[in-house]
Image 1 (cartoon, helix red, strand yellow):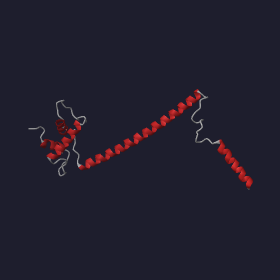
Image 2 (cartoon, helix red, strand yellow):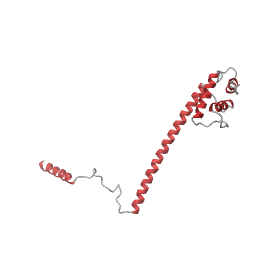
Image 3 (tube, one colour):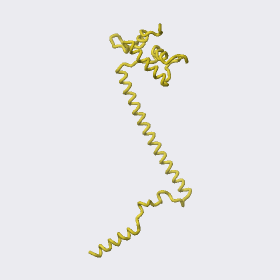
Amino acid sequence: MIHPSYVELMKVVNEGTDVGEEPVVNSRYSIVCATAKRARQIIDGKEPLIDYHEKDKPLSIAVKELYEGELRILNDDEAAEMAEQEKKVKEIIKQRREEAEALAKAQEKEEKEKAAEDDAEADPDAVSDEDSVDIDDAVDVDDASDDADDSSTDESDS
């Protein structure tokens, strides 16, 4: 006989329900599904919630977790509430990560500006990016003189 039995597991899982309430688990199938899901999590690398022997298989560990009360089967309402809480936590984590990234960018920009100032103080003859002339912003002298000539001829024609 397997210990604990399905009946014993069902008693442990439904321990907190009052008389007249719908039990959390009312079939062996629910027990099997819950322990199989937990065994898969253990196989995938999640740490067991109980002390175990190295020879114990993941399913045995999952059954022991359930029997010892370390693992809970949630009813539909509890599962929905848990999912909502998890969603809120993920949103908070995302927001904090974005804030941290923005702060890191601001600090990096500040450090670059300080380094540029330090370089300018160390070598005052060096040309900084602010002092250099952008080719697109430069005015072509020939075009400027042509524009001046055009405006002077327009005024004399009037």
